[in-house]
Image 1: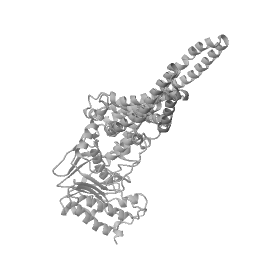
Image 2 (image 1 turned 90 degrees about the vertical axis):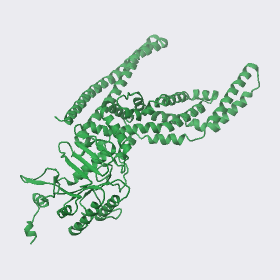
Image 3 (image 1 turned 45 degrees about the vertical axis):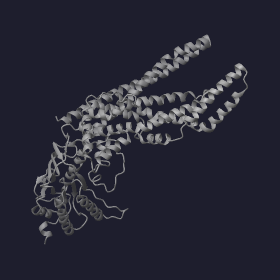
Image 4 (image 1 turned 120 degrees about the vertical axis):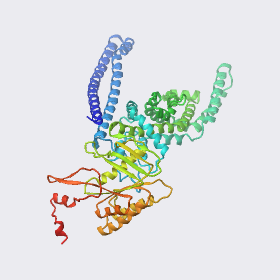
Length: 618
């Protein structure tokens, strides 16, 4: 049994165990629902009987005791419901991991749509984004921003060496810390539990920045506080020493200033506090987890999470201040108590001022805390991919080289299941930089191009690759595999293809840039055979004169002759065979040009009328 099969079996066992635990907890929850109803009814009967039998004095004591079992059952039931939510989320995570391991797309979370430039050099061609894409397979982030960060890593066109190396070290640490990743994912999932929409932190940041820039309440608070003290002194003098009723004037001035200058802020105070407290409440679990975790075996992650570990600057300290404001504002929700508090003190103005202080502090610090969370979510997505593919995914070697190189042993496509994946060796360097790939239809040429590109995308994102060994220098990536026409823009398929190939050639010739790794499937397929052959020869010769690496798949067997005139081009091919009336492909890359074609075979096997080749030439 392979390492991946063992891990798959382990996850299946864990998922089944969680399912059994969930069934037991739900059964227990149903029992407590019935117990709660029964205990409430029993408490009501005892309470009513005591009132009729002994009167209101004894009734109060009996009622307090009679409802104790009901209150206890409510507390226990809530704990059970919380456990049900946690175990349900945990079980969903295990099911999601199983779906990622087996490529069961129907059970994976839907792809989150993010904008992609229409002229991006490889996003659509390599299936990096889309319904059946690399991003969807990898993405375990709960927050929309965490998912978007992973999205941006995968689509980076010019990754920086230091950034990628640091990211890879973090991902490698996280891949070894399964418990940390799972606990973080669980806490994050609790943030949006019961909500179909991903949690978006930008809404909170925008609110903080918008609201923290208003006029300061400090001068008004000082004036009202002084007037409040004056009111007390004048009123005390009036009551104790028969002073004139000067307190009426100061109280009137106090009220006018409060209403004209502070009433608007006071009116929105409860709404603002409720909004902020609710958003911070859902973050508190994630932040508290990051504060309390011991990072002994994760030095890079510990450095990333340093803002959660600095005493006095931890999120819990700032959230605690907000909770104190919430408690103070909560006292004035009773209208009578609120009136008395504000009549004696500038209560609402004080807590509005404290809220502004909290808001200003959070506007400065919250983006940094959220940024760490998003970074961890994106890195954990890549680490989870490594964890779910043991024995298949390895850490790539990325280094600056004097000449461009892309070398891999047993390179496989991550979007093809392990049972169907066929791996191949690849070697592109400055001496033989271009593969000219020939082969039959459905033999695997396009998939091989995508295999090269998608693994380079993974490597530059900081993640593992599907290979036995992998080495690459720092390259730019450009693919033209899936070209489509555009009716809205008035582009035919051929013109869209020409534009794409022109962009590739321009990118190849840019001076001072990294070497280009280009992947091309069927040059000029949108025109006739004669013109396609002429154009393809000229285009490939232009590519060979550049300083990049690349692979070109083609059906035109006449193009294999280019290897005789250009030492930079090496012919490779994929084969097919007919066994028992069926087309069979080995999907293995072989040296040299393809000796056969299969278009007529496929048409014949499909029952289409075929004219023999010799008759067709007559």
